[in-house]
Length: 638
Image (tube, rainbow, N blue to C red):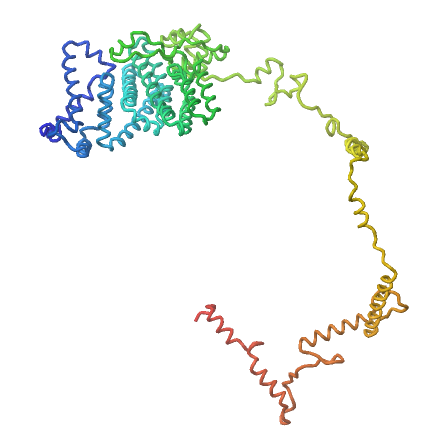
């Protein structure tokens, strides 16, 4: 055991030998080339077996009770010295994936269990595979747009490379099912459908155009089946989750429907997937296991995939679709591959096309092979020949008529103008964008809309007199007022009138006795006498004869002046004034006093002292105090 690990760690050539074999070994779809040689095949089989044994020995933790190694130490040893890596695993898949699925699956389970860091590396490897699909697609589309003539050897290499990528992905999700969750997180389903619909179909067309009997067409057909199987394995994870946990099946069911909905943009993939893995079975599982699934989404997906089986295309003609495989498909790929189910047929019934659509389809076929020609030039060529093949052959052989040979090959196609057709039909030349529309009186006898003559709209009053004489609103209100005349006054025999007498008694006026009336009159007379006495004291008018006090037409002006004088006097007294007869009364503030030398009164001296002490609060005597206040507030710089 010590010699084995010492050789692997300290002898770089040992690990390089294993990696060299895995990189150059023949995959399962080309094993027939090695089997055809009787001398090479035994040697290759021995190296094939020894390499697998060495890799299995590297991940073995215990051989016996005396020969064992710690789990964490072994995982760190494999990861640190690059004895096992994700590129090595991807190389092992097409070599051992078909014949040794159980061994390879157990190997991957052990590797990811020994060192969890390989999980992150595997995620990066899947992202690289996803970007590889995009690179291949961009390469093919760029060559088509630029008009570069790709050689047959380049197309054949691309076909082998595509099959290698597709088979590696399909075998990985088959032997190590735990990777399907990572594929779902990366959105690998959409990448598969997009690559299938755009790249595989176009690559098949290019190879078929150069050699319709090319063996690489079989490899592309095998790649197609590998992609369908990989997609099925990835989406089947959602169905397994639904069956295992029906109580939490709403989220995986919705995710399953979303994946199928996103793939509807790739009709060729949808049609082939529906033929090999009918969606109706999966949708029945969703209906039975998940009661809360959106029925609208479910019906939409079912109708879309069923209609996709009946002839959906992605704009390519029939030559770009995959043909039916025959029974010798397994032998063509070396006898190792499993039997592949038949693919979609290019002989499906096509919808009837109009003559213009048929011409456009023929132009597309010619431009797919000769993209440097213009649309208008191709239309002229197709008008001279019966079918597309003869037109293409004439262009490639240079056997065109003289007028077409001298024409511009890049001539574009300019659609006919509708105004020109209008001029040919009617003989009227007009330059208006609305010519020939539904409101054109020169073309249509009866047009839509209202013909106006004069002011106003039809049915409206012509002048003010007709507007005032219009009583249509009265007729509209007549029915409403007629409803008020439909009131019926019917006597109800069952009406309870028990409380009517009580209500009548409460509403009657209370009648007083004679003694009570006399007492009330005496009390009213006493109140009137008191009011007269008060009026006499105020000097106002009195009520005589025991009658009520009459109301004055206007108030006495003398009384008004007296009230105003009283208000002025009370206001002046509140401010410190006073005195009667209009003379102000209050504190004497005299500061002048008598002439000098005659002596001053005490009040004058007090007033002078008061004025001197309080003069700083008014006039311009408080400048110092104001300056100090401003300086304290920071208004004046110190």
